[in-house]
Image (cartoon, rainbow, N blue to C red; front, top):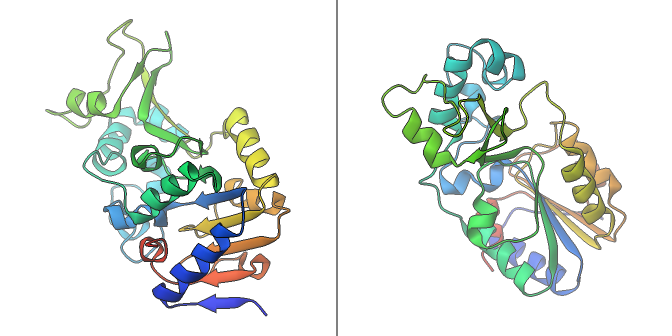
Length: 250
């Protein structure tokens, strides 16, 4: 019978036991991993999809909007996507500890905030890219997120151009209407396929193709840690329905 755990203390105990009993664990996470760090998710009551903007967030984060409303795109990107003041929470730091201990082989994330790397994780597959890389489409020069913010300090709608060649800058973030990076997907698939434990956390598992990756898992234990039910709960051996930062505080 599949366990359904709601108590954080019990969740900590069960996760500790699972990680101690495996040596090729992989963590697959989404926006809920970073909410304890002050970064809003998309679909919860307080998420971006429930806030009022001039256009729906899906529209403003689309490739078409970037091309046709570039100034408005960068205003939203600077104000809502970049959060340089955010710090890793206990989930991020515990995963980094598990990697250093040789228990966790990789993190696969849908997040673009870079908090896993900030916490010390080395093997991170960023399915949707990162705000920390903003690339010139002409010469390939890379600017960090702080540069993008400073460039729009006086006017968030200001369209950044490459300081090297004057070419257009595009965030290294997968927008709606764009394909995932093949190299990243292949790396994530290989990690998940070779894992003996897969812990999925902080994701609604409704955004494809990323959500379909867990079907490549062939190990012995699949755990889903999410505050709300997901469409793939029936695949899990264990469900943990509590705050993910608390669940990983062990």
